[in-house]
Length: 376
Image (cartoon, rainbow, N blue to C red; front, side, top):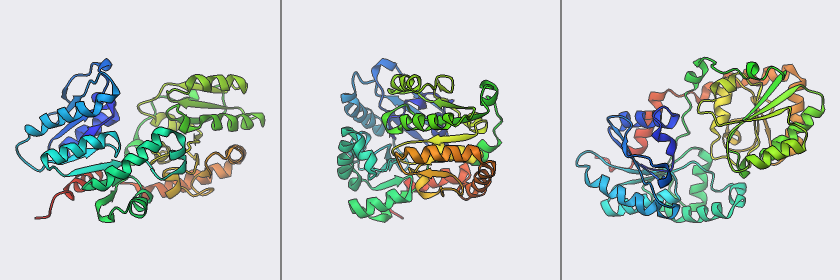
């Protein structure tokens, strides 16, 4: 596996635990991770079957070359079984995968978690436009592609002319039963007793998350006299400017920033509403997690909200960037208890349609790799 996720070096993180489960399922897992040398991460094992290899590169430009060198060494020492290479994305990690496949003739899977064809994704930065152009060249060369939404699969077929049989749709796994049964360890209500209602956001503090929209919409809610608070759990390059906007809007008593939480379950369970104002999402994991534990959701029409959420039935959904819609639905939600209860109860029923056991999910992951090999 070629990855960019440094969190897997923490065996207690969700991604670290997931890698251990993959190792048990696949038989053996070797992960090369793009990492800067400044982190001083060490090569090591997460378990008896999972091995991590940080590139420890002096700069980002050398990630690909360093990962290729490591991948070649790893593959030289694998002497048995079926071996496949999987890349986290069709961008930088894909170049490593393509080289290793050419060198050792190993089947290659590319994973696509982002909606490449979303206009907001393309318009958000020159780097995303470059990534789109790269993916046009890398994805058709993969032996198999795993996407997280059916819409992405259909777009790859229609716009990149990639055969549908090469593409497998497998959403990001959410242990719905597990988080439903998880006890509350941190109560937002106890932490912030000054507020009657609590709105939760959880994301990177980056431009595409459009948290400015959330703050301006929340300002209108507060102007109605509601005693509510907004908790924003996340970190990123926009934090300073967002904190300044909070002061500018006069919301310093109603908005708090918290560090990113590795486990948000307790936050979901003790908030009144989960708010998402992103310009685009590949999937939208937090939307599904919040829904799974019965926290009503108000979101822009991104990621899973396009496929699963129905406005006014199991969630509130607005078009991307629509401040008036977000503001009005915030006011409607908190001024009508029957609507709050209806949204919550409908989602509880609908979420069962997506419930998949961990064993079933891991089996599907294994099958997605097995399809890369010729049938005997």
